[in-house]
Length: 254
Image (cartoon, rainbow, N blue to C red; front, side, top):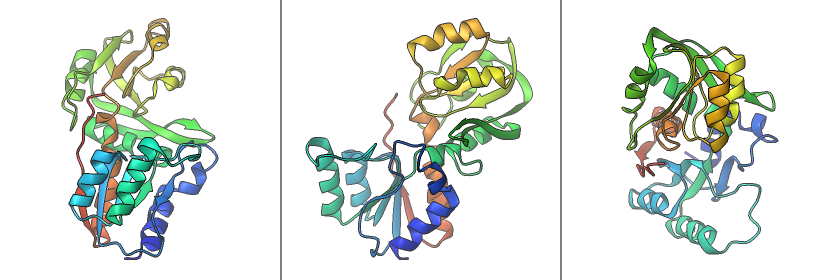
């Protein structure tokens, strides 16, 4: 498959253009010649030297990641940026990135994958940026305690840390709002949606008092652990298109 075709398919599925003025990430093809050929797609959460080198060792033609190299533009190709781009160029490997589009996609996105993991039903978009969704919410099939939901989140794939809980909401949780990664800025949106809990990856200092005063349960299950779902789904799409795929695991514990 030509790289131009792979990029076009991903961009169409993820509605990349809709997030163009919203996301600091330069979503889409960040490194590589559009005229290249693709037989093997590697996916990873982060575009870092470690994941680039592992993808190259696997023989990938393109690395697809959630966190890329360009956030608001690249002024100088030096230091870590040089090392990462050099590793891609040396391997003859392209880099495709999808940040917010992959967070908010209601079928293959990170929040959708986490909602599926939790078994949520009656699912719908949650939280928006520039009118586009970045999360998902739904209802647990059976109401559960905060400690029970935390135990479930502790079983996340690559979740090598204990889920932190701000236990300020109802003792019995039924409605759950999800924004993966760094999503506590949507705490008020969870309150407005009458959710019993917000599940995200990592927190901020002010979230403690905001959750306490809003009477909301907040679960911090790990930035990395909550964002493996989307790239895995993109690998599944590539496999459906007849391409070889590799998932590059590199948990951060954060």
